[in-house]
Each structure stands twice: as C-alpha cells, then as structure tokens.
Image (cartoon, rainbow, N blue to C red):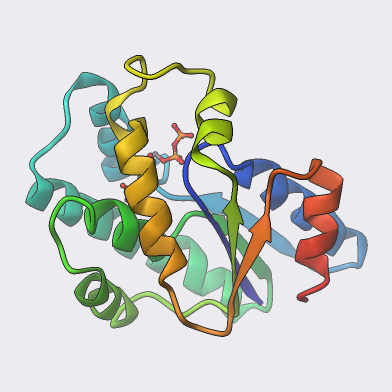
Length: 188
Ligand code: TYD
C-alpha cells in the first residue's frame, strides 16, 4: 500500500503521516514513512534554497526530479516490493502544484513523474483556508519564506483542487487531528 499526504504548507501533513503510521503498525503492518524533499543531498539543497534564495525554475524542477528518482530507487520501490506500507509527506503532486506555479505544465510534470515514480494507491489532500495555513506556519503576510507566500499557497491550492483521480481524497483539515485521522481511515 502506497499512501501520500499532500496539501499546502501548514495543513498538518506530518502529524497525519505519523497518526496513520501508528494505526497501521498497531495492525501489524510494516510501515515506512518518508518525505519529499528528502534529507539527501538534492533535497537538502532544495530546502536550503527556500531560505537562501530560490533556484531558477528549471534548476529547481530538475533537482526535485533527481531527489525523487533517488527516493524511488533507494526507499520507495524496495519497501513496496517487500510488502511494507509506504506513507509519504509530499510526492509528485507537489511538483505539479509548486513547479506548476513557476510556469511548467502540471500535466507534463505528472507524465514525466509517472514514467519513473510508482502511482500511489491513495492520495489525501489536506485542505485548510489560506489564512489558517498561514497562521499555523506562524507567519504574517510579508514575513513568509519564499515558498510560503500567500499567492503561492493559493495557486497551489488551485492545482491540487483540479486533480481529477478517484484515488485522490480531499479532507477537511481544519478539524482536530483525531477527526482528520478518522476521515483518512474511512477511505482505507
Ligand atoms: P516541506 O517539507 O513541506 O517544508 P518544511 O520542511 O519547511 O515544512 O517542503 C518544502 C517546500 O518544498 C514546500 O514549500 C513545498 C516545496 N516542494 C516543491 O516545490 N516541489 C516538490 O516537488 C516538493 C516535494 C516540495
């Protein structure tokens, strides 16, 4: 089972990854959790760029793809192959949204990724109003880092909203974490 949590910054993805991992572990499954960007060299460079100055759109897109290729080969595929449940905080739907905002065609990004990255069984898109997201990430307008600006969050939300697949579930993430978790479980 391959499960992804997506959503704009401040929607509580990492909390829900942990809740679901604990629930599946309690049922006796082997569970592997991870996130993108990863803590590998490409992911670290991407994370640093949010603070130190954004890379060019092409360089950034290339790095997200390099980071994901490595993630797929070293962690995701081996874990799925041995029957573990894999739960990720962000995947190529984030590339569609965030790099889509920088001018790339989200559908082309999707096709590029689905040539090398396994398609998940479930994608949970956690949704909160932009103001809630901004207050959760503890920033006021004008003080956000470059990835977290309001306009960017709105644009990402729009791209996430347009995803048509029936393995994609939209979850109201304004509710308490336990309620969000129950909503997630109801789809599995
Ligand atoms: P994230 O781990 O959510 O941020 P943090 O560790 O600060 O909570 O991801 C960092 C940023 O990377 C986030 O704003 C979204 C962005 N991102 C992309 O632009 N493209 C991608 O493909 C991915 C996976 C993330």
